[in-house]
Length: 303
Image (cartoon, rainbow, N blue to C red; front, side):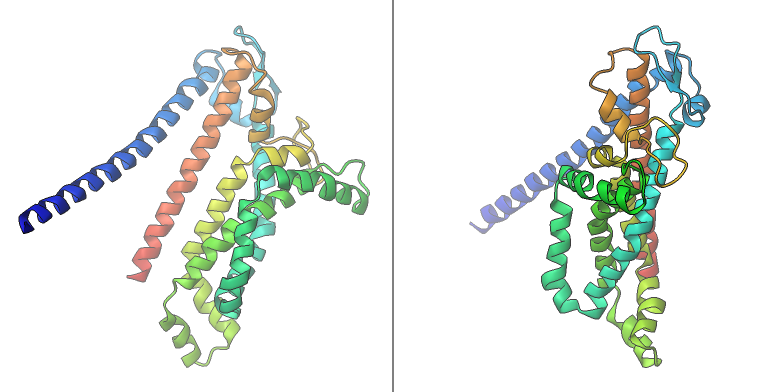
């Protein structure tokens, strides 16, 4: 009887182990398939239509032919700069607020922070992007137009503010978890040496949780780079390099979303859009690699 129970336990263990291995390998295979597909489709810009990588990344001339003959211009610099500027502005706005919120939740008022503040932050994370875009379009864009006396309110500033609100919950949650994971001994040692609360926070707790905080920032950056709908609703959709935060421009994701459905299959425009999708995929891989490296260094630091 006991032997049968043991055999049943071992059988269940092997089954669950096999299931978990299968799903793990499935995710890896799916990622590799997506990457290979993007490389296959995106390489047409260079192999089929004869454009150079530098011409794609470094030129602001965007006028690809919507035909299989090609002959157009596929410089994506406008969209790359638009993405970098918009996401950078969003990080500059969101990070200080997120870090302050994380400190409030873990160090200033942990009871209130965990019971009331964190659920509110998580609600922000669950709001659909179209809602953020609609609020930005109907409230933020007119406000920018009125306050700054601009002809239009659509701008990099509007997109950066909308993205900042969208990535704020991600950075806040990850940063709060990182600070909560710092051993109490670090805090107690700082107080034992005569540090005030703010000295303990800024000189001990924040540096100790720095790898986790940076991880949250990178995750927020990855989400900002991948956002399309909300940004498209407030950025103005002008194919031009931004010269200020009040400029209208486009990003990689907004151009893909606007053109992919109408571009001819096998044409130069479609190939260029696939190349931009490949670029976004590579940016995501870079962000994930950085996160893993930071997580590894954080674990080594704890040891």
